Image 1 (cartoon, rainbow, N blue to C red):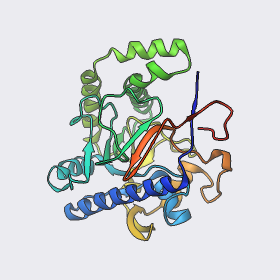
Image 2: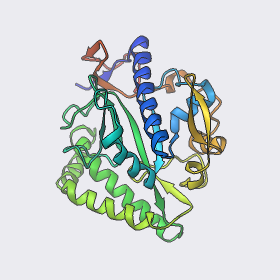
Image 3: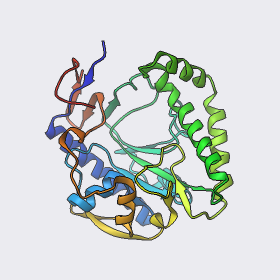
Image 4: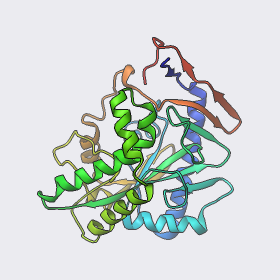
Length: 292
């Protein structure tokens, strides 16, 4: 029987946000030491602008770097990361990990996304470290590039979709896609990265994520991740796009307006463990008061 995840108690959510902040401070420490340029993005940037900290119901934290900076960051973590508290997870250092971006995770924690209990890699509370890769300037090549990104994303997601998609036919399609070796998919992914990142294009994107649709661009501006300022976030200051208004409008539309309560969503999870807190079986019968 289908069930839905229960909401995380408010006090647990706030504790998880503080773990996210701890990890962001570690990213910031390493990047400032190495001169690596990064920016807070997405809901984290929105929280900085609208709330001067986390969106009250937000349960994740996102940072982004242009590909060259991302590669430098991953390399720097091999020497500089406080491995007593954190570990960096990528498809290159973690068998079974299928996402085209890194996650910094907190040692001693767990956070299992609903529907991903079967995924075979270490979990833990995380923040996403997104590389921003070049998109071809040619209007003829962009649709083909977007199609390639879509195909990579769906093949990688097949490990989840083949078990959890509500449509039986789609599950069969994902089952077929899952048979494509992970090594083959990432070989093509690596070629796509290297081929276009050799060109200093005006547009960038996360190759394995869909691009938000509130703007007319269709892709992110490279300048958003090159021209930075510092904004307050939870009483600290972190790098952010200088033109954050344009970025947030592109991503969210009228971003200063609070969404209706029913749209204030968090990621459904089946279990988690914070520092000193463990919650399991976070499920309820359909018809409960919380929608994912």
